[in-house]
Image 1 (cartoon, rainbow, N blue to C red):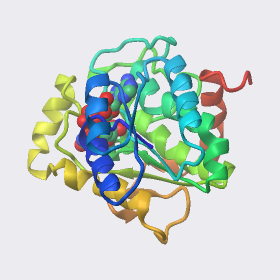
Image 2 (cartoon, rainbow, N blue to C red; image 1 turned 180 degrees about the vertical axis):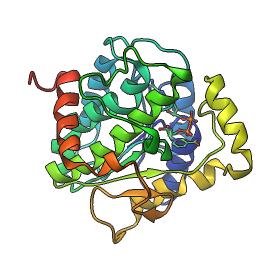
Image 3 (cartoon, rainbow, N blue to C red; image 1 turned 135 degrees about the vertical axis):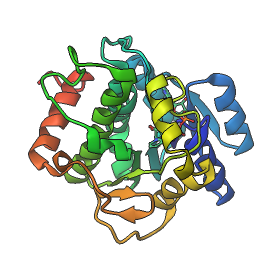
Image 4 (tube, rainbow, N blue to C red; image 1 turned 90 degrees about the vertical axis):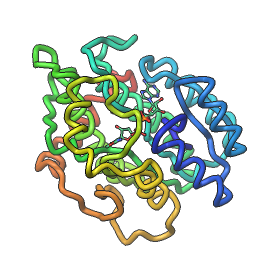
Length: 266
Ligand SMILES: NC(=O)c1ccc[n+]([C@@H]2O[C@H](COP(=O)([O-])OP(=O)(O)OC[C@H]3O[C@@H](n4cnc5c(N)ncnc54)[C@H](O)[C@@H]3O)[C@@H](O)[C@H]2O)c1
């Protein structure tokens, strides 16, 4: 199961895993592109916009109906929303697309993932190092938006913490990773990020190269790294923000997020 599989890293990973014989669930936001990729990999298309948690819930229901077993869930959908705005559920959108929605999807699938002895692979980012988590203000209300970059850093720090905590709270194997600076449509909707990426142009890699960590983390039998590990590309224990090592923060973030997405009432 690969989210954000209609383009970029997710699309290439879907192609490569299908070539290895996997039955791939292609999850995307754009119906036409998602169906095209699904047809190309002889997989099944699922469409959901993470701007709505109701769509995430419907997605989970459809996936559970279709697959009695799930070997891998790759939470890869994400990116920046260039202008501050609220999701259908009232949350800051970059936070919802990168953290709240994948958290909810994973939890709704968790019993099936556990029963399948599955792996969860979360696409994080080096940007986690610039993140902060304010548990009483995950939306960043009142803080400068700057083309979504601070919100993105915070959300990807949340991804690293979520992965560590998932490894603690459940028997599934969970990894997060930074794919590298990959030439995709990532950041095209934010002038600030486009400018930042232009400075890194010489370090950009192709989507084929950027998909390698996802493909490896999904498919290699033994990675020799503990569940919860963050990879920088193919290398375990990549550099993270110090806060990403804070077990107490990870546990509190889990509980706060569960409340925000309506999994618990506190
Ligand atoms: N490209 C990079 O340099 C880079 C670096 C670090 C991390 N990442 C992360 O890699 C992942 C894949 O990005 P990419 O580089 O392939 O870019 P991309 O823009 O080609 O792909 C992003 C995918 O996420 C999906 N998505 C975005 N918002 C969504 C929403 N609201 N609902 C449902 N799906 C949504 C898109 O439809 C698309 O399929 C993202 O999580 C991104 O943050 C990318």
